[in-house]
Length: 295
Image (tube, rainbow, N blue to C red; front, side):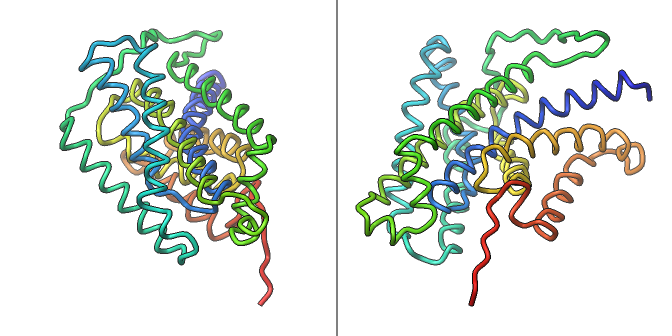
């Protein structure tokens, strides 16, 4: 294998990893704001893509109208999820919240299947399928666009958490009771975090919907996003970007070698191995905060 082909695998893997980071950023936004692990982010990504599809294909509206409308709708969907399903669980054991988000995932997948069916559809963003050449390397144009979107959302998220509202959300994540005691609206902050994560889900769904089509498989991106979030640190947005690049490169280069040995399907094996090893060796991730509780 010559160095050009290895470089091509590495760069394309890094671009794919940045697309995984889009899912991870949605997970981190909620965890960094409310300390809630969201197992429904994959389903929200799928739902966001279907909402854009409904406006652009079913109603025939242009994407420059369909996507902003989907952003507004999904923002209120996220707020509604918090108010209807999660608000009454505030202060309850974390396992109950996990089960609720898992239930939301199943509910959203079932709802979209009932409304739109199981066939795959394309969003037709207008991005050319012709490869983009960098020297002798062939790169995917939609992956380049998706990587640019991921970096833009990363920058926006970092700037947001430096604002007064962002600092309040970080305080809520640290201690609900202390936040309540100083007059911070914990319920409103958690709802806002779900709304923001749902906006990110629209961007993720649009990009991945163009990459692989809009169907139920978009919800399975949760595994890749969760692995990236855990590897980078569940409360670190920078970690989501760095870990996404690392996982994408490992998946791309590693699967090239392993597929020849195991006969294919090694990508998911690599992702699962990274997740398991991270939890075993460094559970707080590469950039996550390492809290030690004394008993």
